[in-house]
Image (cartoon, rainbow, N blue to C red):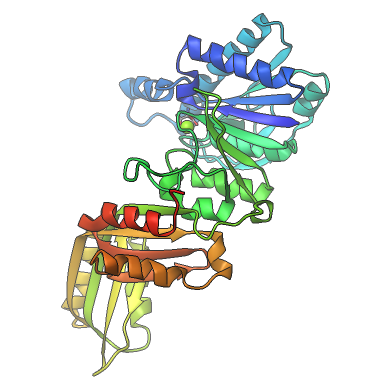
Amino acid sequence: MLIVQKFGGTSVGDLERIQNVANRVAATKKAGNDVVVVVSAMSGETNKLVAYAEHFSPNASRSDMDMLLSSGERVTASLLSIALNAMGLETVAMSGRKAGIITDSHHTKARIEKINPELMNSAIKEGKIIVVAGFQGVNENGDVTTLGRGGSDLSAVAIAGAINADLCEIYTDVSGIFTTDPRIESKAKKLDKISYDEMLELASLGAKVLQNRSVELAKKLNVNLVTRTSFSDEEGTLITKEENIMEKPLVSGIALDKNQARVSLIGVKDRPGIASDIFTKLSNSNVNIDMIIQNVGHDGKANIDFTVPVSDLNDAKMVVSKFVEDAEVDGVSYDENICKVSIVGVGMKSHTGVAAKAFATMAAENININMISTSEIKISMIIAEKYAELAVRSLHSTYELDK
Ligand code: ASP
Ligand code: MG
């Protein structure tokens, strides 16, 4: 197999850990695989470099920042190559440039435009282990760019796509994706497999493990992603196409988002264009809207409820209070003490009664549901924040995720 192995900052956090990574890479190679390794900077390094820059100036040029920050990954790539070499393996260390990673010119948050994999492909043919510095590329002028914080996951997925790797393994300090947050429900189980779409919907469970951007790219490039820990041999979680999952579970996981607030508009003038006016102004103020509910209007008035991230609540308040002043809305109320509990699973597409079961579970616990929204593979409910953990645990057991 051709395997891309990406090691994050904690996995290469000191020299001993770099040696552990070298041992793992060597074992993968000796088992008969071709290996391309992508590494992050040693943990804390990128922050240290940012602090160095800030010592001289709070507004260093973005291209200078890219020259600076890209060095962290080059340190680990070279050290790992040296370590592997010392073990008798043939290696080649590559910067983003040598790996052929071409980006646009948005310094410090560049997007990968294409990858020219020729040098990587010929090194693989020669049987060499390639060690690539993650998080970086070059623009068309040859200036070094970086892909945004946490961007070496993206390097790994893009490279795996470009060289047609069979597998892209992302090694972190977490052992995989769980049915729910194990800090809330200790019976949470690690998933063997999950589809790209489920993973994207469960973002709040996987956020610490994988950036959404990387999952989206993996889906687009059809890259089989595995998240696993570098601290043991424990198998991780495979994130793949839905078609590759034979036994589709009804529900794969329960996600919790406490970072939500509700805005309730009472007595909204029921006229064409009002929703457009309100939500255009909110979007112009960069307020991120999640759920929206409008009830059936009567007496020329309707109520509209919506949710926003807590951090956007103040901006939302400013926008809607203007509508109250202008007598387009009678009144508003806000609730920060809410949360969103979501049930995610591809099996819902073909089974009925999943939502009914969720509502019955809330009823049995005497938890009131404020808002409901659904997609093809997700049911989300807004409830009082004080019931968050209880709701997660009850749903986890309703759908037998602990079995
Ligand atoms: N070293 C970079 C950062 O800390 C990139 C990465 O670790 O993925 O953001
Ligand atoms: Mg990272």
